Image (cartoon, rainbow over all chains, first blue to last red; front, side, top):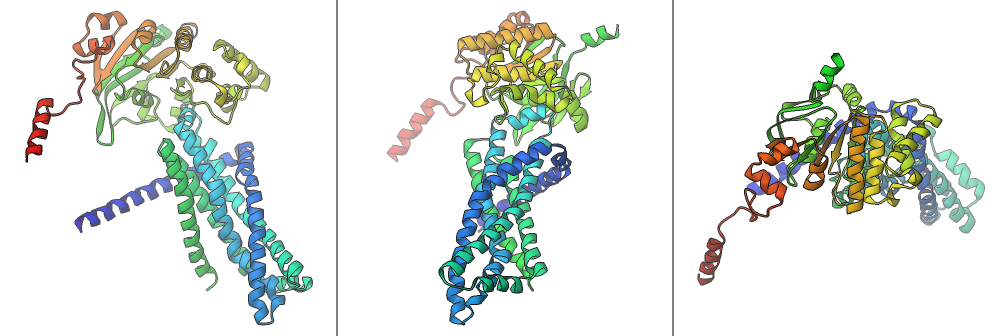
Length: 258
Length: 277
């Protein structure tokens, strides 16, 4: 019993210590954000690496999710004779929930894990130390551009996910199941509210982008400088990002739609 | 007169340095001085904290107590800006080379010049080629770090370390894991760099023969403190039993062959008794 309590205490202290280190790291990264503009070439390169190279997986996933939504939505709606409402149902599901959440989960798996592994490897091979010894601040040269690139790319990717998802729903709903094309888009316009749905979705994707990129960059920075350490940090990035995204989604949804 | 006085002052002074990693005491009152313009080698067995000492001198770690002065400035008390200004006058050669893997050889050497100067591209090109020529790798400028051997990577790292014409270079295990030819090349480069540029060189290594060949001063450290220090001749003449064992590579002596523990006999007897029970 005492041992169990002691272990619980130790785990709690360890988590607090990680949270403290992560917060200090975040503050230093945010304080170095002017480097994002000054080193715009690096920032663009990172946006390409983190955002543009994630486009394919996001677009393909968006298409499939949209197609599945088209099927499932149709099956449910047709029972109530409301198949024409399919466009609205697909759009709401994508813009409010699936767009930000699924994009964030895919983003953590594709770009987040790559960020962690890259930074962890730079630490292991002493590249970060070498920069420090050359009087180059890794926060400005490495962390700030990557953080900003992730933070900026996530909402854009979520928007692309939702847009492609709408097309996926259209292909299945209109193309295969015979829903009227005009009804699909007019229902979408009628049901989707700009502030309540679109802006809420964008806010969610901004928050997820911030959190996932923070976790990914910090895990790389904090990784034990061994191959095992990098492997553990990469796994941690995906697991912690997924939990954080799903947990925050619940909290944000509660705040936005009650 | 003033310049002479500066030339006489030591480049690095370490005074009563105490440093812990967790509960492990790495340095326990270590003191040493590094004369300007000379090659000083810090030697000691693996795990004695030689690399840690370089990191403390470079300000990447802070001592628990004691002081370290570099060029008259106390490293641990410097603001980040002044520490970075000091580091621009200090090159460091890492054991692995620590080249930036997303840049090729040319860009690695150009990196500090691009970061800290506004020199025109033409001049940067000339400077980089000059540094690469000095280490014999001008023709390898388009290779990526993954295409370099360990020795080549270290030579590129040396070219990068001297890119900003520093006053001092810190070498972390420059001879570790090299074949004899590459080792000879690195030894020559360290000597040549030291003589032609008049740099202060601090090496940490446990390669006794190579280090003794090129050093003006040797510092032997173990168990967190200095065991012997002086010129190569002074150290050889007045060696303690520990230094003798280290420099001559004897398997047993003050540093025992066996990991400390119960006697072998007791262990065997205990095993027999427990079987009888």
